[in-house]
Image: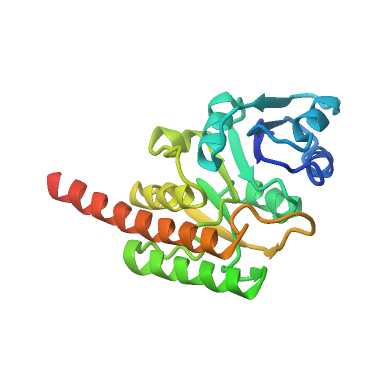
Length: 238
């Protein structure tokens, strides 16, 4: 069995980080490395991780914040031949992660998808609607037939990074660029449907208030357009 690295980017996830790590080690029991990249949590998340006694559990503490850069840092520090990353708030099931890893037998990248067959998005209506709008816009502008462009729930073969990379800035919009680059590079992408559930405690980092939510959504749209423009420029220059 190949070595597997699971990267968790955390900011104030004290309610979820221990049960998530425990479930990961229970359901992926062999050759597992868990890398927690904590962005200066104020609720004791890092201290909880320090007390856990698991083989190959790595904690990286940072003073800065940023989802894409946190995952990028975890990827750099990882040792697995298979790399996975997911939210640390228990909204993305570990059982689905196991399926994603198994899907790599026939794919380069396996994406946990809310909108593929068998998937569902069970959050507040405004969040579900906005996500569907962004994904529809991404499909119109970028193509590729990807149903969940901003999933952020993935398992990949590490050699994928011989062809593409992660641009370490942004929130969920980084994943749109990553998946589009993978599609353009001809990599095999498979989507696995799953039921995305809203967090049971705390407040989503992407929806602290409506104005912030709208601001984040506009950044997604701008990045999609930027990705398309850069793709056209590259095509014209080749």
